[in-house]
Length: 197
View (tube, helix red, strand yellow):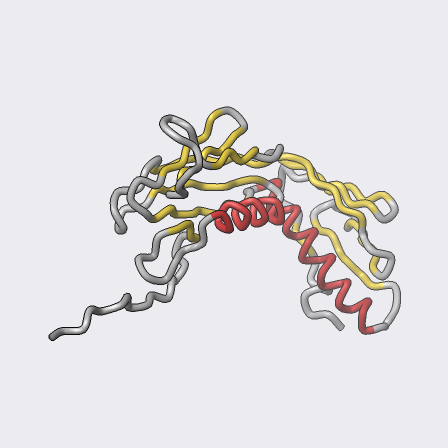
């Protein structure tokens, strides 16, 4: 039996969960999400509409795994529409900067031959359902980074967008320049030392 899958999901006030066949719709103050449940599991609401229970259709091992997966995804949907998810990133490097203009996230991370004066090196379209908030627009040296926040109600979309932005310039091991998650440990290497004579 799946220890995660058998736990009921508590539905907070202000969140509505609607189950119709194999489709689950969750709506709340921050948005609306929907997901199609696999055939190996079944989702049912309690009579008082205060919790959701995920059960499996058979005793097969893959059905147990699907039960735990379905329960975790529905719990993330409930949490997303009620309190939301966020990922904070930091941009280290002299002259590196970021800004939001309309539905576009502009990023300058030290690539030669890209952009130009007053032109960002990367223009990234912000998907619907996500919000990017710039907290510190430009980095100062290698110790005071630029900071921005990605937030939304869909956990997968928030994580995917943050990973795609980080992939543009991952942190390098010598000076630590690049884009990293807040609190991420970057293993540093010692640079070449000149031999003394």
